[in-house]
Length: 508
Length: 68
Image (tube, rainbow over all chains, first blue to last red; front, top):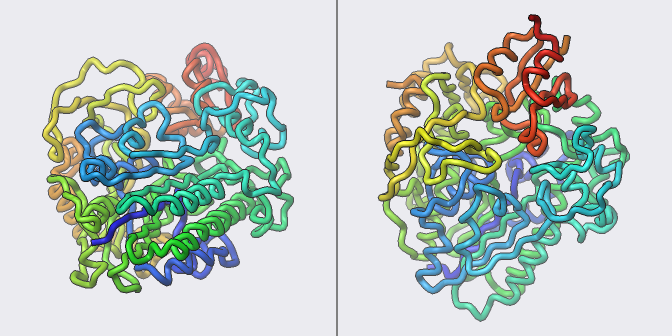
């Protein structure tokens, strides 16, 4: 048994930006400097075929913390009252838990329940649209332009999720002093906390770094590390809109795309440099003998890949869905695990490693058998997607996107049926709800129809062994499609997905 | 005529969506236009990359060129 678990998620970290996964990322002509994550990868088990499950941010966190693959039942929302989050289980066993984060979504409408069970939490303020500072009223014009916050119809920028919030939050930041920025604060605070936690015999800590997430606003030296441009040029955005890069408000010139890619890489290097504080603290406090250390991410981020910027709306290619997972366990050998694994599996892995009880009916399978070499094949399939949108399945080699039909309407199953800001549930009162159950809980939920965020028109099938860039769709021409459809049905059957999902996917 | 009209799925009714899709330009449904504060308080379309607001969606659609 290990005594402690430290789980670190680095939001939006693309695996091709880590040299343990790729020599050079798809977006640059040079490697991204990540010597500390590389150093950790040498000491850890590197998972080669790890996939996200429910996207984006909060759905991923519910998978990690409660073992529920939620996207088949509901969109972004709270920890359900019947969930069994890891920190609550720890608490019942007298084990303290700690959350350190700059992830402001925890404090937004409809995202409650995630931090409340931790024995303690630190929240570093100011990232993205965190509603923190309201001064100066008129932020610096350069940041208004580079963050694309300038809007002639919303000059005060007091609206919910207004980009102006970021420009105010960072108004006093010094671009020559990286300690003003978010990853340095998160990882320094983590290191300091690790230096003080020794009086506790056992603990669980979750470090949720919102970096590398946008805005890709970097201090020096990172801002200039991967570009010859002036990083303060107002013509060069560090916070592009989500969408296609060839049209609409997300349209970017080639020069702007190059700049965004350089700033993402710079931010990755900044995260890496401050992550070293954690490794150094592990050395100093001799935590390697007693502590499991996990580094992963919720998803990647399109940086012009397949013509897209960001996440929502786009089909789920591997840039977004195939995520890094580095896991150090004191009793496991180093090396690489080829077997298919899924984000939801971290829940059972953490509980098993700490010899804590695993609740019934979760969707999580412990990775310990593959870590210790007792098992070579962990999963035959992994499902991933956004609620109401296409459902994706992979066997580790082929990826298959199955689009949904417009009818019947998507159904949501949750105790939550309304959100003050439609983030991501209906904003208007639902009066057509029905009581229902979900197979993973002994509690009733509301069942109701809700508009979906994204629909895709056609299936997509890729052989990622011969086509790792996923540029050649072989759906409609490959015998593998029938097998992948069957695999998708097997996954849905195993999870006891709602009938509505089958109907929307045109599956019997 | 605008080339691209982007709208937020949370800010249009089914009938408005049909009208937008029948316009000459490309109507692009987005999960979020990342302008929630304004989007909730009125009607918003992003027309060729520029946010455009009005009291009602009807006004906006007329402005972007819906034929009578």
